[in-house]
Image 1 (cartoon, rainbow over the protein chains, first blue to last red):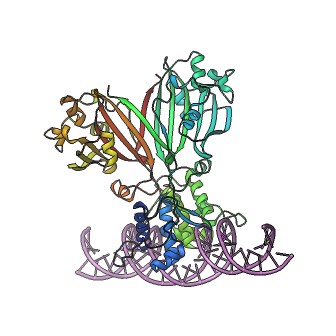
Image 2 (image 1 turned 180 degrees about the horizontal axis):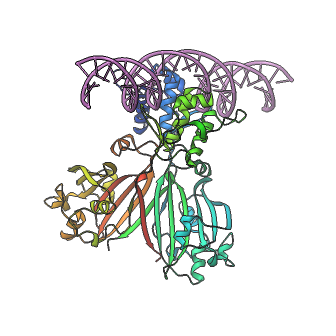
Image 3 (image 1 turned 60 degrees about the vertical axis):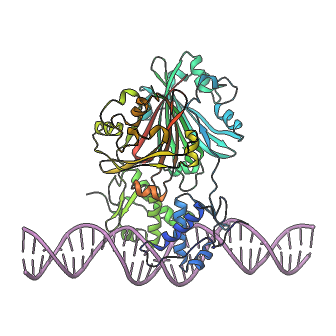
Length: 262
Length: 262
DNA sequence: ACAGGGAACTCATATAGACGAGTAGCCGTC
DNA sequence: GACGGCTACTCGTCTATATGAGTTCCCTGT
């Protein structure tokens, strides 16, 4: 049985000017950090904490909401508050778009995930023509209309990322790129077949807190940021042929880049 | 005068099963998104919101703490709750370690910041020998002891990043690398002068919520994640000569990488 | 053996009230 | 005019209490 007693917790310091609910949060955080409560363990119930510290329930709840905001714990209605388990992590290497990775019949996501022993899924396909936003239009060199390809990626049933690719309409119409499934090697393979030999990608990375919509789509727990990656693909003539806007659950990803020292 | 009235806010829907404090947070969030409260504007005071919605003050505070957790607003004791201003952003290009950027008398950070019109500062220097953590040791190929160089970077007085470089002790002792100021071009220039010609860097990027210590060091507002970047520098013989562990305020950075399509 | 009811636990939401402490402006005194 | 204090406003913390709702498990009646 996991430790769900208050044995791991100390007493309050009434002389401290640190707010009581912060002191309690500090103690719980420390106990979690030191492994006295392990991943998935149930913390003491609110009532138990009330008794242990001799404070009101609101104060205890206040402490717990601090830890929840930090993403350290998750509460489950009717069951208890649990130390949040760290999910498996997906590593993205900087050579993930190398041509040699493109000739399989499956998508890069699927191949990688299966290699890592996870069950990959891709859903919520949407492929349609749109007027691009100001930002996307600028990145693509100002096309009036684009093809937008939206999809969401899941690992073992858990959504980890959703992405939208924007391709200038004149490159996409009438090609497999406009199909829901563009075929082996993905749209980069198709673009090259159409004579747009890819030269390089630019990636722009931000990290921020998710919008409520992103929380929903990625089923994010409280306190999990997102990594926002915007990739622009350029062909050998210097033309931007695709912009891919990706939002990833930050707790599910590590990004890897290799830079030459030049 | 900025809109700090409740004019921009609607009424509650008592038939909704959405919690009252969430409804209030939704309305405030929408008003901020739509620009009815602009950056730096003061929101209605808690008392005003209490009167407008006819709920208790705790409920209003609950709503505001939701928005604070999302990083949308900051509260200032005795003054009010304000829409958080977006700070200026520092862009990190993937060629930032190219040799051609190394010959100036100043550090890369200083040069970049001044070019962007900001006032750079570097502080809390600490240079000392240590036993490396397991992780750092592994990345460096297992040295017993390392030189750790810690520093913090500020822009216009605001801390934006702190970093620790770890260099195997046998490379560093008795060289300018062990000095507080390693000289123009930084330690990479010194390493190359010592015959360790740099070949490439590996960068590993994560995003997560900050620890309390990081909140303090970077003076982070609630709801601002950090970008955690671990860079390993390799020389032409494939030896790892430095690991740099950097924690950045995510709202102050955009990372840029250029990948060859290979 | 099993289905159902209900007790006993969990967290979620909300109210009302109190006191503390930081800020800013007004106003009178010196 | 400058200083100092008063006051009214702000958010911060904490208590006490009530109700609702989801989960678990036992016990009882069939």
